[in-house]
Image 1 (cartoon, rainbow, N blue to C red):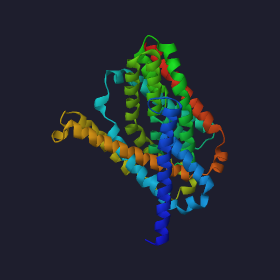
Image 2: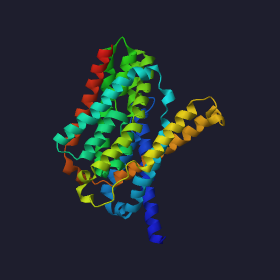
Image 3: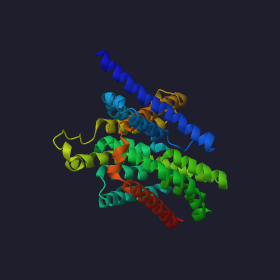
Image 4: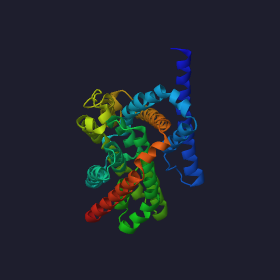
Length: 361
């Protein structure tokens, strides 16, 4: 490797890691020290993307020289993060509360995917952007966006815009939905928790909303119900991500006409296979007190914790690289329509969740 090439790789990696580290610190500081939450509901991923955007505008030549390194982070590192993400998902953790929440979760995910995609098409938005907003709203926020983006050949601009929409409306839901939940289900904290677990986007935001509800109304059951419901939503990544891969494979010419001559993506990418395998590994490991007949429960939990942390850092670094690859001038191309679609998606999921739970009550 030439000295100049090595230097560019070092610069690119340094930019990514700086945005990721500073984004994590800033999100934690704002959420705990400024807004007073016990655990910050602000996404470190979103802050890292914003920092990457800032650097891309201030030093475009430096970023352009690091293009190969940034692509490595948005492909290889992102894929590794998605594979390890599977260690978070275990069918064993779905309790009776999860079974109670299942029909509402299914309804909200289906509505988000179908209706949001149709509305996005009617608004003449790129299919990729509509799909990213749909999975971000319906499943698990920024993580679902990061996992789906490479399958549908989404541009960095579309990933950044979808992440911004999910973060903005997820934060609004965090602040507003606990009070809506109490107004609708004051005597049923389990239903209030399921509402928060389905109507708020990102995992950290769901936790923040449920903690706010618990502190405000002394309802620990709501926190438990919201946590289990969000876990159930997250499990559907194992279904939706392969579905997105099939959709991308069938619509490749429609998705990116300019790339129609390029190699078609595999029906199910390798990192999706790895993701599902890790889900299965986690589930089997959780079945017994002595995982796989070899490990102690303590060693198993420690291993899971380290794999989950590594997954978080891989996804964080990949999204910081996405921010670094995005030029703000490109947002003019999309205008405010994606923001409107994000608002419609958030409102839709909230209304459907509340309506379904009212019937169950």
